[in-house]
Image (tube, rainbow, N blue to C red; front, side, top):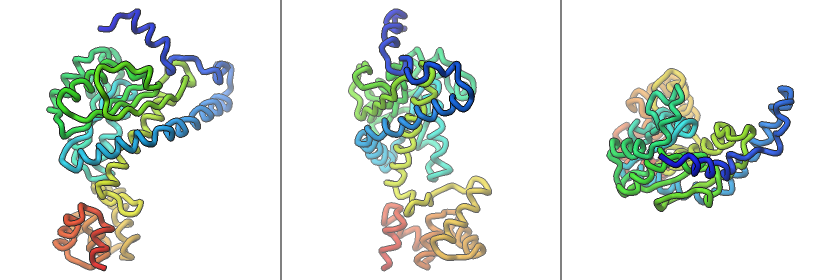
Length: 309
């Protein structure tokens, strides 16, 4: 456990633990003014994220390469940061047709911490090390630590153990990199200094928004690079509910010109695989031919379709 005086001194210096001079009067504000103040602060988040485009692109690249060779992306975090990682992970299968084990979210305190705060668990790096060991993390994987302060012991434990096992590592934090004290070399550091929060220390606000934006970019970018998007439409979605079934029919109709019944037939003949149904409709080929062409072109519909021209 870290010495409490050391922790006190560390927190005192962190940007996320400072008072925001622009919101000093929020306790006197009416609802409209509270909303205005928060909105003005939130507007700055995208600008902060934009200053780290190169680092985020580097993260997209290593995650894409890991997933392409059968590895995993594993998010780790505690509290709000941990929940954001879990959220991004669980959205990948229905959105991009990934297997549940390809993108994983670990949160300090386990599953219960998703719904009821288990904040004390973040103080133990050994819990993070144990969670990484139980996942059998290896050199094929990428582990992305999410920690607004850049100092969460649980997250540092996951990164240390992952590095020891040869995995690529990413750190996403919301303080300047020079305020982050690490014992290991991180492959990609994404520091987004959002400055003092609207309410001092409440990192579920700007810091959480920044981390969510980065997670969106990392997984979406990697999935685009894996051929799971055609033009700007997700085409590898899983048909897990009625909305997604009807969205799939609409996607097939939009690109092929097929009516509702024909789109339904194409989906059925393709075994529910939207990408296969799309290529069948676009190129007027059988399921077997469409699957073969997609495999030859690494799952990219545009390349597979153009090969017929």
